[in-house]
Image (cartoon, rainbow, N blue to C red; front, side, top):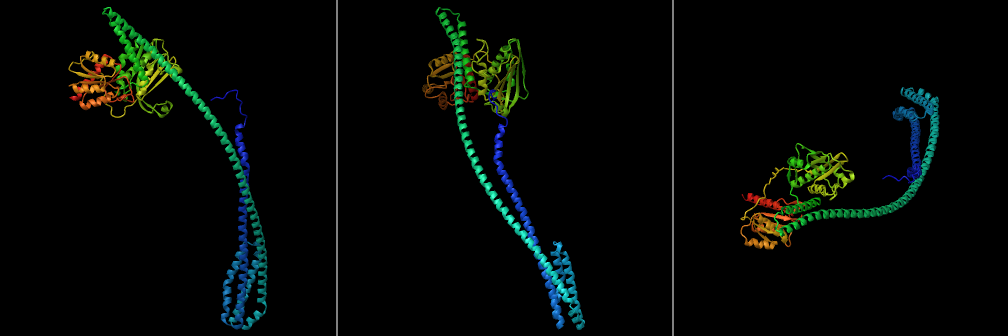
Length: 640
């Protein structure tokens, strides 16, 4: 829908205002989460630092332990040496031997522990040198004692060289312990500082998380309040819209009712006009006929023909109305539309006249369909007549057949049209065409653009009703000054296709003989009297009843009966029920139904039951004669 030009335009940026407001509302929350993320990252860094400090402290402890172990090893070696020198017993050498075996491992342990302490590398080197000399000095004294040089061994021990080396080692060990203790203390202080900082960061993180939670709760409450307010406004708008829609629906209902009344008015007006004209013809000619007969005149055939013409026009009008209302009883049969169009070509050429050239384009491999052949022929004649009238100066009429598939998209855009395969018959003229508003009303009953007296406005309505009743579709394409195409789509007949029955060509009115007895059942006296007299005029023997009960009584008394001719709609018992009762008494008795009412026991969904013979009212003497002979002939063939 286009916007009114005098409606004030929205200021620039108005559409972005809700987004900006949402961003401003989210900014504190996003900032808080970023800060919390920074705190978490900082906490992780502090944890890493704490782990590094703990590892360094562990190495400091390992260094002190390695130094103590090395010094203890030297002391054990010295103890073993002194015991052996004093006693000469080899058993005192066990501590010495064990200490010398562990000496190199002890030195390696000290050096490994000091690998990350480059500042203490000099002290470690001095310790290695002094300790190595001490071990060597102990070894020399023991070797002299073992060689029997006891005095030399004692002299070497008393020289003080061993004591000096041990004092030097002790001094270096004390220095290393002092330095390592200092480093350990520094690392412990740093670990404590890191722990305190980590606790502070964790506390800040907790407080920040609580603040974010509080803000989120507050923001959620505010959003919830805004949502409730928006929902309330939306609900109010919904009720307002519903009221508007209800008001519009009421107006549309009033408009539809008005259109219905207009259509009914147009329909009844057209009916009254046409029937009054036909009744005027019938009554006028019958009155003139009566006056001429009263005066003894015999040349009255003209008046009879005129009255019959008026009656036939009235019957045709009734059939067209029933076709438009989709209430006419159809007798569908398998159709080859190519054959049907070819068979109608000569009739259509005579109908169109010499100024209109007719062309047929028949598709190869055309599918079969199932429809009422007579109604389809009438529809094609109506369309051809409309096309001729649209080409007053002459032109070309093309009738084309083809296979067609209406897809889901087409079906969705055309209400009531199922998607599927169809047989298409298109009638195209090169006439004046129609405007879109005329196309929209083309199928309305009694709607016509022709001059008064040139048409009833029921031709297209009849075609529309017949096609719809046959589960088909009809579409008009027209362009002013270029012509019109009417496309009829009839459903494809799927499955085995029976051979189409040949069309009968009739000559004279067929008659019966007095040996053929027909039972006529009709509750309307005048209609019954007319049927009885018509059949007797056709040389049949006729017995008649005013209702089913009387008919059954006559059947009990009467011998051979050739045909039951019964109305369908009667009081107490329908014609179908009567026929069922009669066939129980006389199996195989042929039945011919007649009715002017299409909603009855033998017509379902507008289609005559397959095993039923029906003659619709009103009917002519010729139609009655041919239908009776057809039913009797089929019955005789079935008995053979």
